[in-house]
Each structure stands twice: as C-alpha cells, then as structure tokens.
Image 1 (tube, rainbow, N blue to C red):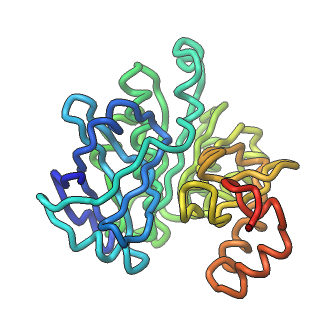
Image 2: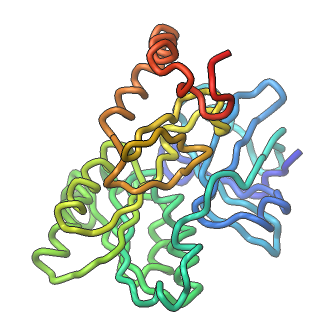
Length: 293
C-alpha cells in the first residue's frame, strides 16, 4: 500500500498527488513513469513522474480525469492509499544519459502542452540542478488551465507562457511562439523536447524539422497498459515498430508517424477497432508477448 501524502486540485479536472514510494523515488529518473491502481480491482493507469524527492521517499504525479478510474483517483485524499504504485518504468530522458559538460554547450528548448507540463518539469528541474540553462514554452487553451507555472518559472532560464485564446501570456499555439523566438527574436536552439497532446507534438515536430532542430517527443499520452501487452501504444518510428511503454516513452519526433498513431488511438477505443488492429498487425500487435495468443 502506498500512502498519499498530499492531494490537491491544480485546476479544473487536473490533480496533483505526492505519494510515499521510497523504492521508486530512490531509482527513478526524469522521463520515466509509474503504474498506479486504486484497489485490487482497479484499472492500471500509467502516469509520467512529475517530481520526486529521494530523501522523503515521495513521487509526485499529475493526472487529468478522463475516465472512471481517474475520476476515482480524484476522490482520494491525503492519508488514503494506492493499492499499487509500480515503477520506475520506461527509459529515462535522453538528456540524463549525456555528458554534463556537453549538455552545457547545448541550447535547449522544452515545449509543454496542457498536462504535458508535468513530465517536462522534472527534466527542466534536473537540468537546473546541474547548472544547465534551457528555455521553456508552456501552452494551454486558456489561463485557467495552466499548471505548475510558479514551479516551472523557478527552474527555467526563460519561461514563455502562451494561451490559445490569448487570455494570458502570448497569444496562440506553442508553435507560434517557437517560430517567433527563432525567426523574430534571434533565438537559436539545437535540441528540443516536446511533451503534450499528440496533435501538438505532431505540429511541433513539423516545425522543428523545418527549422532543423533535433526534437524528442514523449508518447506517454497513448499508453494504456504500460507493459506492451495491450498493443495500444504501438507506433512506427522510422522503419521500426516500437511501443511507447517498453521502448520509450521518448522518441525522435521527426521519425514518429503521428498520423498512424492518432488513427490507431481512435480505432483502439472500440472492441471492433481492436479486433481490426489485431488482424491487421499480426505478431507485431503486442509488444510484451509478441503475438495475440
């Protein structure tokens, strides 16, 4: 059992929790995720780690209510317990594995959309602790849906906030701000990390390819089971079949087939769609077992 130390609603339907999980906190790195279950009959929910405190033995998660299980999670309070809290899972951020001195030479920009701000934060914080500068663009539909602005401002070298409706910060999409920074304000970047809705990451990748900025995206939004067994997060990266949960969640954004991945997301929502994918993809349908039997 894993005790909830803190529980709060950040904004409408978006919640933050600190969970007591010392073994996970001891080993996790930015970019990895955990799988949680509210009780023994609960659905498995993969969530990217938002923050961690090795000394206190806590993990911070942020989630949005999108279904029955996350709605149940939102009702949990400080002092309640998760039945399962498994991790760390997935591969750490590519930045964690690089030489620190080489990282200091890079001009890095992070682009976060909506709840994607949560998994961006630990990477930016990790860089800040290592003395590495980076810019961050955070986007939301409107001011009320922005999260972790104060926390991000404390660790980012420059924070650019943008809202689709222009109610706060810069007006427009995150891509508009990135293009403006590069073309109008003279910014130069040689590494980009984008995390958010699939459609946002698709258009960021299209822009950064045009701007010749190598780009990493996190495909945590399409994960369901978190082990590769369900086949939900199957994606084509270049000429290879990958699974976000076991091979990622981070991939080269310029190689990800976003259109195929988003189409699969829609098909996967129905039993008929899953049956179609199983028949079409055969032995590559699942990542964990290698086949559907």
